[in-house]
Amino acid sequence: MKTLIVILVLAGYWTASGVVAQGVLPVQVTVEKKEATSRVVKQKAAVARKGNMDMHTPEVAERTQKMTLVLKLLNMSPAPLSGAVVNYTVVGRGRTVSDLKIAKEAKCQTDLPPMRPTSIELEPVSFLLEETVFRHGAFSNKNTQDGDQYYGVHVLVELGDRKFEFADPKDLVTAMKRLKPASDQPASSVSAATTSQARNFYLDEKPFDKLSNKKISDWGILALETSTKWKHGETEHFVVHFFANADAIARRCEKFYADTREFFGFRHDLMGALKSHVFAFHDPADWKSFKRQVKLADTTGGVARSHEFFYLSVTSDRQFDSLAHVQAHEMTHLVFNRFFNGRVPLWLNEGVAEYFGLKRIVDLTTFRSYVGRAKPFPLDKLFDAEKYPEQEQALRSFYAESAIVVDFLTHTAERRALLPKFIDAMIAKDDADAALKLYGFNTRADFNKAYERHRASFPKN
Image (cartoon, helix red, strand yellow):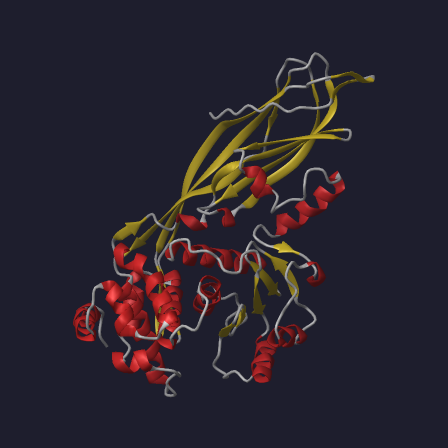
């Protein structure tokens, strides 16, 4: 059981006949876990064919917990508080605050007698505590970031025009401000906001003219002109334009952001509070029309351009793209641009995006198999490339080889820590030989020798 106490100060205290005195009104608020039950749900492994790649979905076992919480409010003044309205919100989160979402919310009216605790039992809520992934006889517990772990309860007590607030834990107050309006707004305003949040946990849906960043490029204007059915919303770092699947798209955006920033050592975000735009097309006909207007190839599934990302969020049968390869790859470009300023060599830009894009959606075995089956692309030609290969096979080899080089440069924790410095060096001067000295390779021959050993460990055709 976890107990927290907070002293809430009010200018006066109340009785049935009105305000009778001025002074301090102490109230104790306690949150207790009454009971919890756990259960395990399993999802069998599967293999799906996407293009020329087999996508392996591993077996997953999720351990969930159903929890009952109890609020205890103690009016420590000598006078009763009649007709107090208690609003409570149970909030869950995953590994990062970006995963914060409302799990349960409600309100009730109660009398708070003096010097005697009043208990309010909350409706049971379920949280994903652990996700175990079984891959080829092994298992991993590293994928819990998508799940919800118990985070806390936010309590807002209202009496007339007086309001006081409590959060367990205390830092939940800051997090709640992103999900709900400030507590000094009218109760009707709170109700309207929470109704919207019940539909979208990760996205704050709003009209275009209410967005914090309404500045879009000529491509953005063309995208929105393809349909009158666009909806809009915001997450912590993105403005999302969508038709459907808002929560899944928004969650992925913030997850990709958090993963990329963590990988680069929590590097400073150069854009600060300015949000990038994501345009998630839902109708293949709209997407085809947009590509024609901006002169993209027919085979293009998505494209990142400066601080905007455009893509088709569904498969050919209009089902939500659960594999998200395109979103993962192009979102890496989008997030990458928030941390690094300057022109990145083509192979490095695509190598980082392909590496992250694949690693986010497939297991290690599938990643190595997919990039390893591609025909090797000569390193000298790779490092000197200023445009994409025109032939399809050569293009696939270019992407795969770039991803393997990035895999080599990040193969250990020590190497991974050097990658941001390597990228900065390549931006400052496109000289691979000089930048590779950061890794201890004094000559290109030294690098090539070590890289070929790493390359040989990948499966062949």
